[in-house]
Length: 268
Image 1 (cartoon, one colour):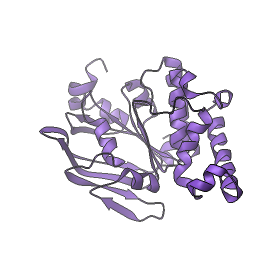
Image 2 (image 1 turned 90 degrees about the vertical axis):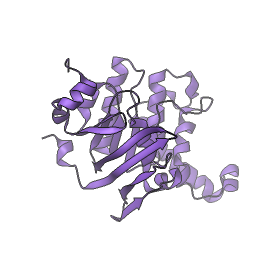
Image 3 (image 1 turned 180 degrees about the horizontal axis):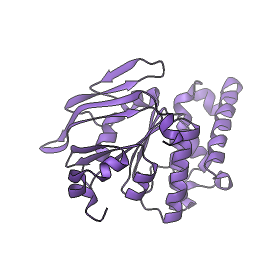
Image 4 (image 1 turned 45 degrees about the vertical axis):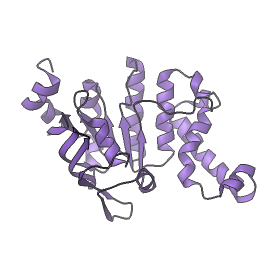
């Protein structure tokens, strides 16, 4: 048993019988699974299996036709939603990164990560613009927090560099930093290692585990690299054509014949 497994707590999120369709196309059909506090929970499956759609339901981008999401708030209350808004999800502590980077390429690393603090800002827009009095004090506090994230992600040398000038792997790290700036209780990562070389993947794996261990952040990730999934995940849910076909520890999923037939193949 690893130290991460010893710290896994109660269920923080439940997906109950989620079904999602776009016209006549069924993206998800009756999908149920849970996520426990402090764990790394992977969602895997072939292209088109419904993985990103599931994340979009959790953080309110999509509204399912059937089913509900239950989230345990910081005060322990169970909040149940048939329709979740993205703003409400963010306020409750659910942050998200996307497959396609949506960074502000002309802005610096520091300023990009600062945008993740927007929900934490209490000063009105006018005071923020003129940067006086309490607004200036508040901005300095948020900048101090962001500088800690920059140190944590080891991108101090690029803090004032426009993001568009950075290599792809570092841009993904900035994207992670912006999500961390929201201080999420639940972090949704959509293919955080897509397009990376081996060294960049190793770095990102280390940061994901450090976020999980040091910040205590619960993580749900989509990833196609099965070596990564099996190494860093506590539990894995497998989707195929929008249906759940497997759920368990990496070893249990690896031995599941339906998963092998649909996705892993005999070589795994």
